[in-house]
Image 1: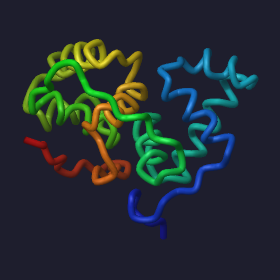
Image 2: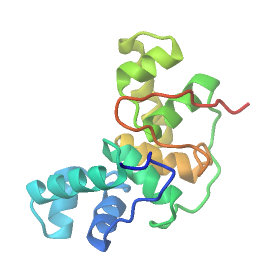
Image 3: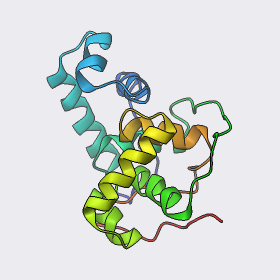
Image 4: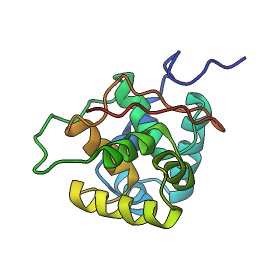
Amino acid sequence: MTARPGTVPARFTPAHLRILAKLATGASSASAALDLDITTGTLGTQVQAMGRRAGVSGRAPLLHTAYRTQQLRRPERAVFDGVLDDIELQMVQLVASGASVQEIADACRISRDTAKVRLKRLRDRAGAENDVHLVAQGWRYGWIDESLTVKPAGFLGAVPVRG
């Protein structure tokens, strides 16, 4: 029986951590693979292996797991030049927990299209290239911390909203 994600830290290999560190910068798969001198296929295979090891699906929750378990150096804290509303904060946390766009829409009680637009706007405001980079920025700005657990496949628990 596999432990629920977040209860027993998944141990990533040094190669896994190099991939996650590169993806945390906002690099695309192709760019990360090129920089790491591997193929995009190898990168994808390694991401899948990390997911199996951690019991989660997706790059954003993999990065969050690596930060949460302190296997990857967390970004230095910075002050965000702006304010997130409660829904935006919840959206960042849901992305880090592994929620799909539809799950984010349902949790925030907005349409899927509205969720997509708001996520894009949020990534733009945070200076994030993609969802993995948004998680890194979330850690940088203190929107996410180790108290946020990652959802196992097929499960979406309530994500607390900070006031």
